[in-house]
Amino acid sequence: MLYGYWNGTTTLYQEAVLSAWLPRILWWLGFVVVLIFVLICLSVALRPLWSERERLTFPIIQLPLAITNPETGLLRDPLMWIGFGIGAVINLVNGLNYIFPAVPSIPLYIDLQSYIHNDPWTGSGWFPMTFNPSVIGLAFLMPLDLLFSCTFFYLYWKAMFIIAKATAISPGYGWGGPSPAIFPYSNEQMFGGFIAIALSSVLVGRQYFRQVWRRVLARSSEIDDSTEGLRFRTALAGSIIGVALLIMFAVHGGLSPYLAVAFFAIYFLLAVAVARIRAEFGSPVHDFHFAGPDYTLNYVLGSVNLRQQDIGMFHQLYWFNRAYRGHPVASTIEGLQMSARARFRGRSIVFAMLLAGGASVVVGFWGWLHYAYKLGAASAWGYGANWFGEEAYTRLQSWIENPEPANITAPFAMAVGFGISLLLAAARTRFVGWPLHPVAYSLSASWSINWVWMPMFIAWAIKVLVLRYGGLRFYRRVLPFFFGLILGESMLGCTWPIIGLIFKVPSYNFFGS
Image (cartoon, rainbow, N blue to C red):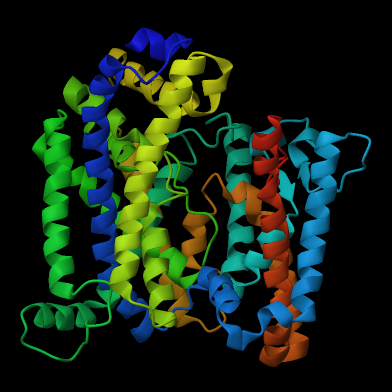
């Protein structure tokens, strides 16, 4: 069975092959559906607090709501079509250049690293500047202080890598990002900062959660859950049962019960942080590379003190913990918020999200296995996805063959990140006009910030001018232009993969180099 999977030239559609894969697909299908359901339950509990009590804006949902609401008149606004045209034309020209090199391109990517040749400045590592119109448009929806702070702290982290190179403490920043557990410990500080975001978000709403608890016990009508995607009582029961099933799954796979509990506790804390970031700031990045529960528990406990079964199960769960840039909680909480704003039935949205999550697992398995048995997973076709598999199992081999004791420095760095985030939050509430946002400290340590820091800076500069010289009224007037930038580049950019599939040619990647 695995010979055909690895070498290809055969077919998935054999009884022996299908009967071997089907039970495993069903196990993972159940796992994913339960995981998404727990995140929906979490979103149901948090959405009213953040939307109706704290009045968070959920920036990313503004565009789809504006498009689907005929009263906004967005599709009749000339500014929107001007922005659309700019984004679309830039993408069209660059797409044609990719296929026909004789067509001149419009550069959207510059790597400053190619101009840096002397130490210790080379420690800054990969230093891209991108100018994608869609990202500028999206960043324009974000708060000013976060835009400025992300740019500031991005350069701050680059300075830390240069200092590390100058002092020979570490080699600085590599292509894949900062190495885990090496100075300046940006991954570990990032983890501590996001834990601070999650805990503070929950603690601030403790009065609200008391009301929710009384509602669950049917002792209070202070809060109404009749229009939510799930009743609070159902969400609580679903969370408890769902988390128990996830822990049982991990334990069945070989993970120790106490590690399974710790693993999912950390995972859902990070989920709260992602949900908060999307609800309040609409940040396009929150990847947390190499800062998940597997790395954290390994640093705290040491791989030498973990059983091989524990280490093995950590790596079986690596696929949704390597990074969190596509975290499901972002879609669940924004989907529920859109249904609430549009006065749509929340329960229908919950069903649709569960159905979509389950269908994606089935289609993903089918697509991958179909081409693996046809072309071979060992062929160049499988490079993109095999990269993550190779990364996981290379790490597994390292942890087993070279076990290490508990890392004292990494948890200390996590505590430093936690403390700095709290200090920045305290300064923001104490000093009027404090420019540095605590969330940006952690966001700017992520890998994906490399792609968006310059569009964030451009959006910040434009937004400052708009608000200073035109005020809120002018901001609302020009907003359709930035909606158009997002739509123009994104819609045309998404057609290139379709063209590639139809004509069986490589397609233009409209985001990046």
